[in-house]
Image (cartoon, rainbow, N blue to C red; front, side, top):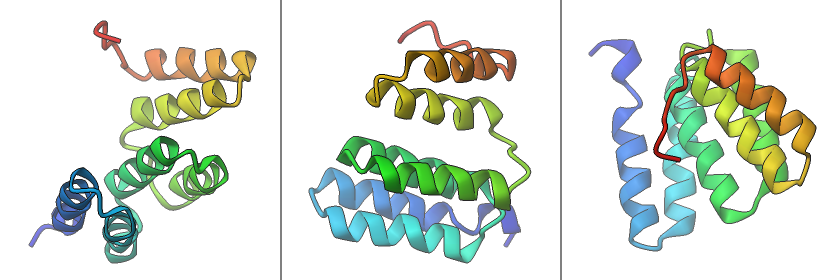
Length: 113
């Protein structure tokens, strides 16, 4: 199996468990995704979004730092949008806008939000 797709299953399982209300199971699945392939961006993105939705801002911050340390940042726009969300939740407008600009510069163009 192609290494870049080796963590798709834990991510999908994490989303399914999260939707079913199994918060601990979802977290375990997202963590397994990163453990299976620490160089793939998607596991970090799912886990960061999960922690942000759970209000676990310090955990989200920790995962964002690991994301940058361990990957090539193929999903730069998503990475910067997660920082934007984190800083917005912390009411840090200046850093939120800096990362929003970085996300747009990296190709983020979702006009639906």
